[in-house]
Length: 182
Image 1 (spheres, helix red, strand yellow):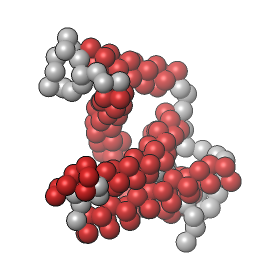
Image 2: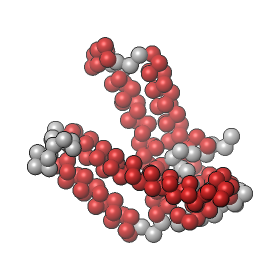
Image 3: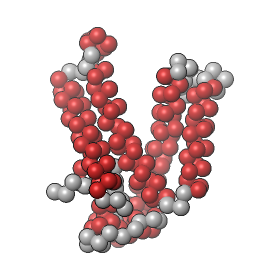
Image 4: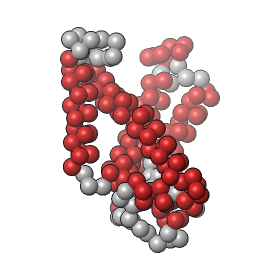
């Protein structure tokens, strides 16, 4: 199996593109190009499959990414955070959400390759997930921190296997980016 297959979740455009071109790389720079690249897999429903996936990704990713970074930074600085608080009670939290959203809009507005930005964002998130999973596994297995609520053996095994898979996928993404630049 080629090394790119473990990275498929974090690099969804590259593999269908190569299949669609039968090994010849082509540039995917528009949503129409990406939908066309899915035709060998999804057939006549390629455009619908791509549209549903693209919209669903945005609907899920935008609020999660905007709020998770704001929660992490506000929490790290010891400031109040959370949607259960008003903007007056958590100004840094809401300010960070606004700044992150405006920054994302600015990058999207000035970028001439939205598909490339989508792939880059997914790759960065895939790489960043591995260290977060390791920290979560360390905390969730700590008797000192969680006492009787710590992970049991099955959750520990599944969690560490997931962390290992994400680490391998992140390493493969970095390798592919260096060894096979687009």
